[in-house]
Structures are given as structure tokens and as C-alpha cells.
Length: 264
Image (tube, rainbow, N blue to C red; front, top):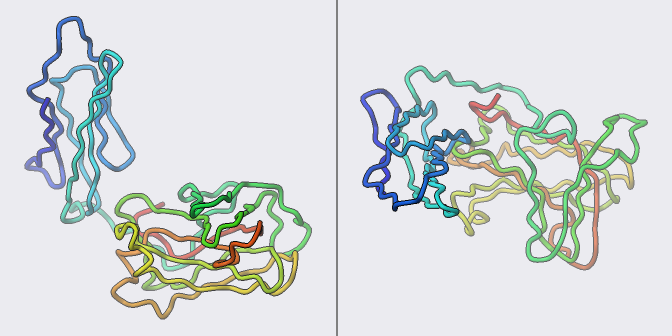
């Protein structure tokens, strides 16, 4: 079969279609699933049916089609490059700090955990002490790393979204661990793949008191202007970075930072 994602005469609109489809005798197409790189998908069993999709924001989108037939899956994928925002798109950027995750009601994007070659995890647990300011939340995150220097919890934005540090440069979160231990917050651009660390920026916070909730603040006011918007798309959290001699845990909550343009 041949796949086509073709630009139409309408702004940022693309038509998805299949051609040259050969279906052997006795084989039925169970499902055809079109994905446009924005999380949404459309499905059909008719290989002659065409779909249109309009992209509101500029960026590169990984589109694909999956054909399910006779217990097999046939795929084709390629990239759609959208050069500009749709004419009706309205920029949505808040000047203040927004909540990314409170391990309860708010989660902008799911957490991930990179074990960095060894072991570790980030799990939601009951707050070990919700009786005092600044953290009375019922649930918090518990980060653990095992013999891993650079194990990290991370949040990666959806495709084509980026942190905007031009008006708000600070990230904050609540931490609870051992006095003297460091909690590192790092920003990276995953477009760089394995070389993301080369343009990543990081700051460290030293915990002041043992087993006490405190506010950790990271101010990236000095970030290179070339990278303060349309660049960083992942935030990583590391505890005792560079230390791989054992099992280390701390609690974290209420990660907040600059707004992500377009996300509501």
C-alpha cells in the first residue's frame, strides 16, 4: 500500500489517504488507525476513506497509519512539518508560575523515570508529615535510586511544546530529605537525543534540615537567550547526583515553573 499525507488548500490542513492497497482473497481488514502526532487518532475499516486534519501550532509531527488484518499489523510513518501557526491560533502564555504536578489532582504531563543503567523509581505515597506548613498534601512523590549516579525523574512535554523562560525564570518544588543532600533540577532539549546534556542547564538545591518539608527554588534567569524559549522540553530531577554508592530516597511535591505556551 501507499500512504499519503497531502497538504490541502486550507491553512495547515492535511489529507490522509491510502492507495495501491492489495487485499489477498479471504483476508479482511479489521481496522485502519490514522495518527497525526498530536495524540488524537481516527479509525476505519474502509481503506478508500480519506481523512483531513488541521494543525493549529507550528512544529514537526510524527504521523502514521496502522493497518490491522489477519492478525498482522502493517505500518507506515513519516514526519509532517508545519511551518507556521494556524491563522486563527491564539497565543496562550501566562506570565506567572503554573503547577506541573502535585501527585494528586494536578498533572500537566505524566512523570517518567530514567534508571540510568541501574535501578530506581518514582512512586506516589502518603505524605510522611502533612501536619505542618508548607506541605499539607495527602499524597507526595517518593524518589528512590539504587546504585545509580544519574537516575532521574522527568517530565517531558508533548511534541512541539517548550518551556518559555522569557517572563518567568523560576522553578519551585517541595522537598524532604537529609540535610546537606543536593537536589538537582535540569532542563534539556530531547531533540538532541543522546547529546541533550551538551546544551542542558542545571541548578542544585541543598536541603537545609533533615526530614522537614522545605521549598527548593531554581532560578534560570541567566539562561542563554537563544535557549530561553522554543527549546527546552524536559525537566529532570536528581537526588544526590553523582553518588552511586547505595540506596537513596527523598520526597518531592508541587513542582511548578514557567507556563508552557499553548497548554491549558
